[in-house]
Length: 215
Image (cartoon, rainbow, N blue to C red):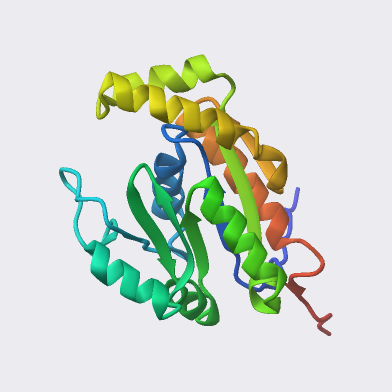
């Protein structure tokens, strides 16, 4: 029996801006790390924050760590695609982190909270390039009990901070219908499989494909 002919190459597609949101402890950082490890064509949009670095974090790799005065200066200069105040700290995504990488043909992975995702969607509605690239995904455990267990296992919050995070999480989870896709988090491997299925589907979307019939 003759071997099957090789599959034709997939049509080239324009780069994606993949926005992943989740409640605190929902697993979005782990999912993003897994995606980046398996897909070198992707790059992460590094965000700015006024919170101090956690153990092992480095400026310019995990976040750009700014003081409150420098963060406010950049807000006034219009340097952020989105910015928000979360748990008494400021976070923002530099426009250049997203737009420059998209223009280079790179898929951009943006790990932000629900409030930031809403702002990006609002900006994309008025920007054809962002709107064309945008894919939004909400990741969450199936229950608040599971989310609480994950936060307790992480061990970075006091009891008061934990209760505050859970209260915010309830509000964030209620916003899941504003996203194009929902992933109910189970295992790291399954979350990654589902996310890759979403990306594959988006690459094959007719509106994004760049395809001509050859001879």
